[in-house]
Image (cartoon, rainbow, N blue to C red; front, top):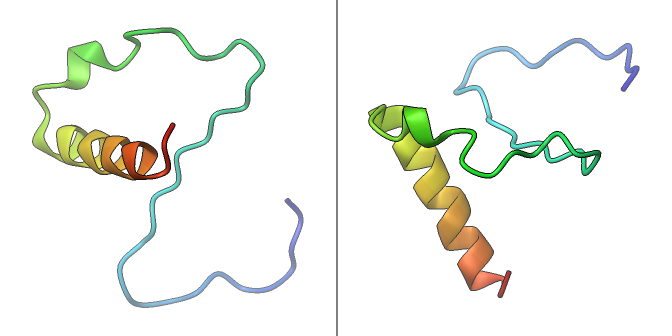
Length: 55
């Protein structure tokens, strides 16, 4: 997590979903955000990729 390279400029920022696996996950934690279109789109994409991978 230490890297002296400059951050890329321009373009669209990328999104990352981190699941540390240390008990930080709480089922339904994002449920209250399901009505937010941008969150709903991201979670739909994550679900589609997870399903495609057989998870």
